[in-house]
Amino acid sequence: MVTTHTLSDPTFMTADQVLQALHDVHDPEIPALSIVDLGMIGELIIQGENITVKLIPTFIACPALDWIRHQVKERLKQMGFRKVEVVHDDQTVWTSDRISEEGRRKLQAFGLTPPARNCGRWTEASLAAVTCPHCGSSNTVLRSFFGSTLCRSTHYCNQCRQVFESFKPV
Amino acid sequence: MNPIVELITKLGDDAFILGHRHSEWTGLGPILEEDIAMSSMAQDKIGHALALYTILHEQFGGPDPDTIGFLRNEKEFRCCHLVEYPNGEYDFTLVRHFLFDHAELLRYQLLRQSTFAPLARFAAKVMGELKYHVLHADSLMQRLALGNEESHARLQASLTEAFPLAAGIFEKSPYEDQLIAEGVFAGEALLQQQWLKEIEQRVQAWDLHLPEAREPLAGLGGRYGYHTPYLQPLLDELTSVFRSEENASW
Image (cartoon, rainbow over all chains, first blue to last red; front, side, top):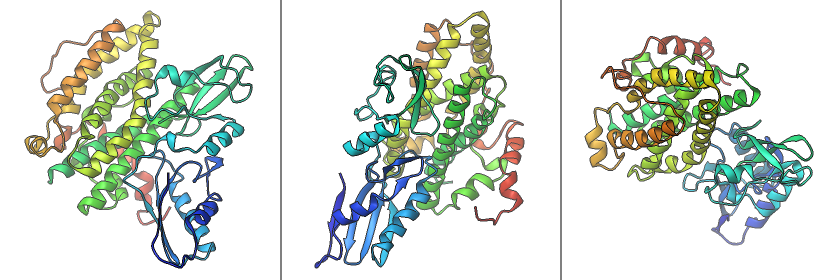
């Protein structure tokens, strides 16, 4: 899912090493997930000791984007890169399908139902048909299309009688 | 004005002003879920305005997005009258949101084909979010229209008031023909036609009715800088913190 270009040899750092390091950068609204799990890295261009990272924003109004950009820069400088550029990848539209399998497992463990994989073809019925992340029951109802952050919807589990949230498909 | 700049300015201004109106429900929503929904949509819409103002800044050398949003005079805004109206009671807010967001989703569906690539890309992204806005509006409209006598009567009264104003969403730009000819935007007339079909279909199913067209000029003027008396006080409030220390870094 991540396009990588290594433009000079010998390589100072491999794309895999960079991705591994970027697992340390988290979305502050869902601290369980790294930006790599979220599929926010569009492209890495490594030129010797210089690197350009193209970041794909999730929700348009996500308030964490500047903070994330800053953290990416800091982390890569820490690795020893000399020149770090973090730019907005405007060629790729982020969808929830970009969340990795590992990311989906982490969401579940964090108490957020992962979004159905659907490339944006979700319906109100499919959104409502989620299982409770606490007890696994499918006897749940959709309470709101919105939740405590832009990426969540609110549900109620009739089985364990708890409100829970789901990561919205987009 | 460059025709594309005019188009993006009006889209940004609609989102900015309606986003602010929605935010006025924060802490005051009739139920917690609606408080959260209006606040979330407010955040989305202000974000959409920021993205559009950023296109103006990056592609056309306009001022930075904060300056566009906070420091223009009322006359320079190109939002439609519908978004300027005070929230009123929840029924008016809901009906306005229903009328506006159906138009918004259809507009971006058309703009996905825009020959102006930054706008086409923005359209592809924003549609995923607007789908939630439209479904929210439909679901609440349906629940209240089919609720009880009072909820139905309130929606009908607000629909009668808001529907004529919604014509202002589709007020033609001075550059309409050029935008259509260049494939930037398929045009307000086509959009309005598609929108009316969506609205009529739903309203009928919910046993509401659209008012007869009365005043031919209702809701018009916003796209040319002629606004309702509600816009200036809104801008005063919206910009009061920013203007208190314009060069502050946040």
